[in-house]
Image (cartoon, rainbow, N blue to C red; front, side, top):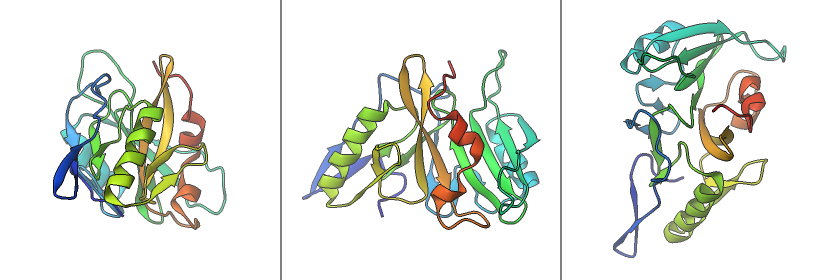
Length: 206
């Protein structure tokens, strides 16, 4: 498994820098760290709704709603939308999914408004998906590591806790990473993806 929040890779004693998506920056300009199986930024897997709301105040106000229960095998789930503090309304920068049984299990970072997050030297938020794939492959080759493919066919970090979805921004499909742990009734992180995130994949948001 790759590292968690570095911004360069090391191969043969030299530092290798990877593209940072400089042609497309997220709106806030801030960065959150990622620790596999632990959490992202101030959010920790297993948190209750109240704990998520309290921790997310560093970014902005929240809105809590029930998720439609599409599968009876899953316990009831809440969606916590975290918005940035700004005059004009905007889509949530972060969406956290909290299961009644296991607490916080999925953290989705918006491709436009979300904080930037890195995994093993790769910036994951708001990237052109083809560019991110090229960087992921180059990073894996430099580190003699593996890559993981999504069902849509994109390569990404070899971390089962990172699921990259596509968010259509204008005419470009940008990366909207989901940071996951397995929820109740699921076998893998892919099985745990909230149905709202499946519907979002590839839909226009700007």
